[in-house]
Amino acid sequence: MIKKIFFIAFCTLSFTMANANSTDNYDKTFVTITNNTSRDVNVDIELSTTDKHYNDGKDWHEQPVALAPYMSKQVLWFKRDHGINSHEKHQFKISIRHPDYISQPILLDLLEQAKPAYNSTVTTSIILPEQAQATILTRDELQTLSGNYWGNSTTVYARRWSTSNKAFDDYQFVIDQPQINSFDTSANNKISVLTYNTQLLPIFANAVDDLNQPMLRAKAIPKKIKNYDAVIFEEAVDDTFRDILTNAMKSYYPYHTKVASRLPSRLLSGGIILFSKWPIIREDQIAYSKASKYDELVAKGVIYAAISKNGKVYHIMGTHTQAAANKPGESREIRALQLKEWAEFIERLRIPENEPLILAGDFNVNQFGTNTELNSILTMLNVKLLPNTGHPYSADPTINTMLHSKSPSRIDYLFYHEGHVKPTVAFNKVFILRYLEDQNAWPKFDLSDHFPVVGYFEFGE
Image (cartoon, rainbow, N blue to C red; front, side, top):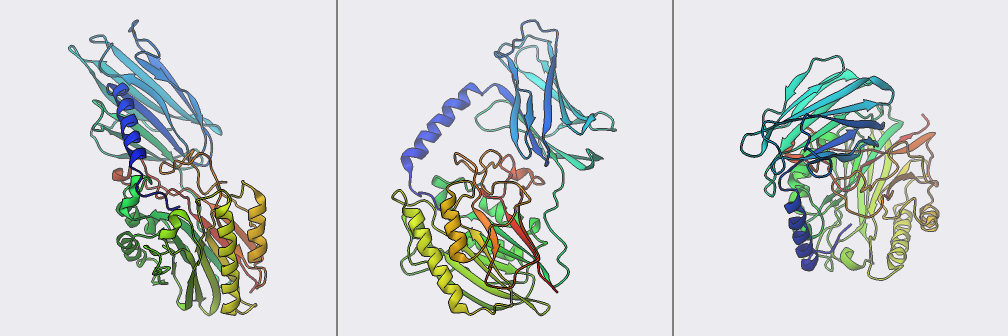
């Protein structure tokens, strides 16, 4: 979504609050665990010390937790300066357990040693299942430790770093297992299409939106999504960031459409663009005539491409519809007008009924909200809601480090058109896309404020 660009009062207030909070945390070290797996994990913490004056809540605090899939949680903090007795040691033992592999815990050990005068040092070690104890994080850089346990190849990413408003390092550990988010579409009658809102907005939008290093993200995204037949991006609005994205995508997708173009009445492009592994034999686009609020800056609309996969033609369309509007109910009214224009565009294209038509994009309509609008979309476009085999939400502030909305939602979809040849197998999968390998992406290692959605379609021979 395009948010308000000049919102000075909000930014000033946020800055003031951040500074106030940082004062309380100046002399603390925080430990965060991220569960980047598809199962819950349990985190427990044990303190070992002879320091009788070391008090929970004043000098340290633990928060044992059951971490849901892909969730991050601060599980421990301890003070590094005031209230530490000279020569005392405080040993924090953190165990991370998979419910199906209780006998294979990941064991972290943080040993704090008080200095004679003031503050302290911390030594960190880890024991992975069936491996010896190893000292880690002796330097301020990302460290990876891999093994084969918990029924899969598993990697622990570990990092400590300091920030300008704190005196001592923080620690974060990510438990990561690979996801299977691509499918065998080597046969010409099978196709996988990805839709992804990238939030690559102009840099001045950072006044309210957390653009989170858009240049780094634009470079990193393509390699992470290289195994699909076609990819549709939304919010690739900024020209510079889109050029970076496009150049990186060429290594995996040699063909792409034009971006949804500017209008004389709109400041920015529509930000929608399609990439394909297969030749694009026809393309077209429209810009929606109606928009409200911040969307009036952007030429949102629909892009269309026909691709030829070894002679099998697929017709693919991508959109980004109206987000929040100025008046209650206005956004829904505008989306209805936009979808009417899209349906009329489909009619004008005269796509053969014996060839597949796939519709995708960011619809800004929550599957778990008022179902009447979603039902209207399905009816107007002549599509059906497909099963989602992945994460329930494509926008989820409970786990996405870039998103700050109040509640999770599913607003990104792929459909097949009921008036054209129908697949025998079809489903969506929302999945979590993160850039853990580069420490420069930490701690906000999500690659957008949305998660990508892949659609798999299998048609008759």
